[in-house]
Length: 162
Image (cartoon, rainbow, N blue to C red):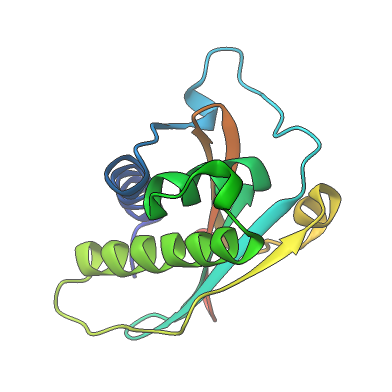
């Protein structure tokens, strides 16, 4: 089984690389920020999810505030801000999940083959995003250009702490 700290470190590095190279956005671990906490504001979230199957199976999800998702769509798709539609933001958040998940497992487990499902993205209220269970999950809070983003990796059928 992967070591929890190893997964966390690789996931942060992978997410940072994806956000910086594909979207031109800097990333920090949220708990490394001076002062500790910051708020994502009152805007609703987009949650992208992708499932993976292979030596280990589970789900990776990413919660992104709508405003950041719009900025990501502008940077990734080369659109003007006024041209960005909801479908663009939904697609971009799903694609980020795909990029992070694919890169993460190719680094963590170079010998196994992993199959990824098609990503899907849905809108959530801020409260719903906080309330949905994350039991037995590795939760990695990120600061992406001042916005609170949460990367969650859940392995199926594994005990907490592994």
